[in-house]
Length: 157
Image (cartoon, rainbow, N blue to C red; front, top):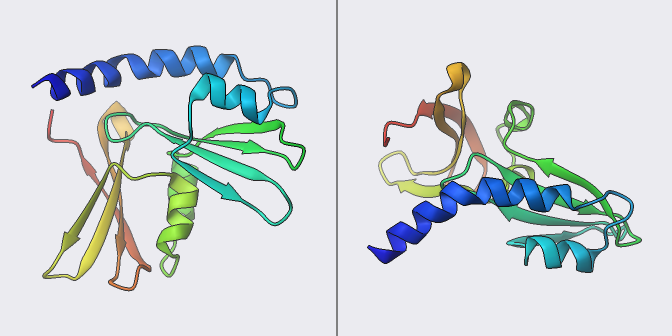
């Protein structure tokens, strides 16, 4: 019961904290150390060969945003991106790998395996048309490659 209460409070207040904290970050000025101090430890890090770095800050399963924070090779903040957008959803194509999808969209809200269809499905809570909350789903085969995408409304509320 206490964990449910804490989870609910976190979902209610996290967007406000994000707004305050993200407002403190300045592209071209904020350092890795400053971002970590303000945002906390990232859930995932990607280091590219050119020295650039991306940190992931998921706000799922309750939230409808996931953030990727990009740093240049100089370790200064370059950009903060909200990944759960229609533009990013439209980039998902059959044949992409799970790793590609994780880097594009961030941590999914849920991961489910359907044994009859032999599909792994990841979903992200998002805003659908008409302002309804719903889920963007990515269906993977057993080898971890995208088969297709789908959406569905959030009927849990």
